Image (tube, rainbow, N blue to C red; front, side, top):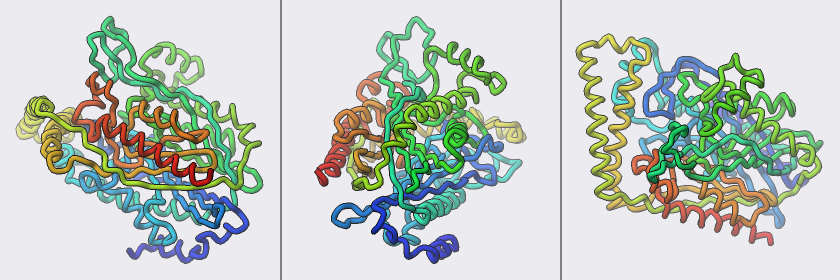
Length: 529
């Protein structure tokens, strides 16, 4: 591809595969880019369509490049990119492939890298552009763009995806170019951000969210993890340059917004820079959190009172509020500050860095005829609601000029489509019983990091951490397009993330993912023992 960006940057640093590696075992580079579109876009993360109505705060991407020369002279080179989107499309569905488009541009400029050395993860903000599909909008939401947005031009998802891949490649290349002799320190702190969002009823079924102030409420379905896994990077003068923050919580406080937003990561970035310096980069990772969210299920009144007492009442308090975003940013920053002094005293300038990637053939979640019948019935019911709106449009074509007229209509289409997809998957499984999934394992000193493309339920992540040989283990989800990967107890409960339409892989695949991730970690740690 003749890309001016790639050509220009390449001419500046072709020399730098590892030019300074002889005198500095570890080299790290950072870069940050704004990925906020300059036109309205379709936002992703809900059943209903949302045409963006402005920018609440910028969405960004951060690149972290790591190079080293391990004992024996072997080089290890990695670029990681964290992106404020819902997921990283990887070619598994609907034609979109942000991951490979970005990798292609990067390795054109950096031929010393291979595609699997570039790892991209999403922060899972529900107020970012749609990058998961290249289908015509009518096939995604049931109405053409000229009906969804008759009064303003909207950037097609394909155009934004192309623009985004070029911007992410620019960040990756810049981070690579910025590599300097560096050190790392790592630590564990805690911050209450993610909470289990599934409530179990007395009769045994579960539901996502809902009102827990109910005599039929039994308990919260699963475990919660408040670990704040941290990696600090330092230059040779021991000045802080960046922090990788791994927490089990998707960024969806403002998940229903019609404005673009990085969610609580925006306030967190501001707060951390104020606390530790404007030069500090922030790299968010979402740990296993498929059944978690920032939404408060119990103690909601007490939390809202504390938000008011903290002086955030003018921002709006309670669920989905800006006050909650500030509250989360404070908790994360305070958790980092609590261990920061000892992090400064424990910097390693020559850690072992090893990486492996693997494509697993995970068994698909097997569906039965009863699953198909249930889905067909749901599709029929929602299809009738969708058709009713289409009939209304015939009688009143001007209704498309009403603000957000399409919300219920596109919800009906999306839910109808979910039902038909179950039937399609039932037939697909007869000839394609497995799904290829890319995972990564990274060792940095005594740290292990494993990735997966799912909205992975917490239990799987806890099993990985509990059995890992590393001193500290980071689980990073959403390094791909993502679908829920629920536990057996969640499937039994039947809440949203565990139903057939929400999942591609079931518990058998989850078990395999745990074992293969642990095998990769053991391989990396056994190499140097």
